[in-house]
Length: 376
Image (cartoon, rainbow, N blue to C red):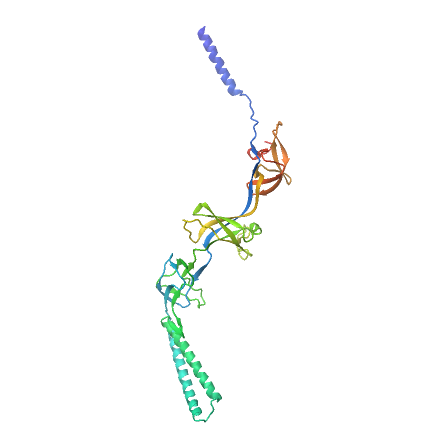
């Protein structure tokens, strides 16, 4: 008898378990995802991507052609204005050297002939045969002066071709290149023994070195045309450098380009954006002490265009639109659990948006983005 009751009990338990799994109790969780409108700050910002570079830099090029004879400074060296940077050793072609020597000899012959003519006329003046204001005598003296000047010029030219050194009056011409500004050597692009092209050549002159004042650094980047239309000089800027992403720097917008840098760009890319970039410059950057700044550091600049403080804000994702009218789902005690309510919007930063009217701080709204839509 006891065994029979045990068997019946086990049977009932098994049937109850099967029934539970086959016919579970229907429970519907009617809890909706709700968020609360809150007081916050909305900022609309223009973002520029670019680099940190010196405000003033110069390229060093030679005025005479030749071969690099000496290099006096390397990358990273600090130099003062007037410091020797390079010594250029002239390397004229045989034809050019021959031409210079020939021109010098021709000038010597012209001076000698002019001097003989002047001496002959001078004797006539001394003998009172012709007056001192005699036209040929005056012209002969001028001709000698021109011949002397031409001879000096030809001699200086030959000296420069041969050695790179010459003198004009109290001025000395030299093949040594001096620093035009005080600064830091950014790069060195030539080595001893390398031939260079001068600025007098019809070809592009050889860039030998770049100098820059590393104490005056600026940000150079570009913004979209939509942002450029709202920028003006003097706006405050927040900068973030790639090597120091955890530190925010401040600066002042110093320049907004009048013309797009892509205005004259040509491309065959059919998918090219119509949004033209406009160059901006940020100066007066406050660099924290103890960090190393190098030319070319990547940086991002954020320029505040508009700002709304202490306003009611909600995430943009909860918005729905009836035509062009924005709406939100306000939680209530109805069977559906919510109803729609139109709102008037203000400034947006792309994530959150200002609510001008329709909601107040603390109002609960349904997060429809978590529901798959209002009808779900």
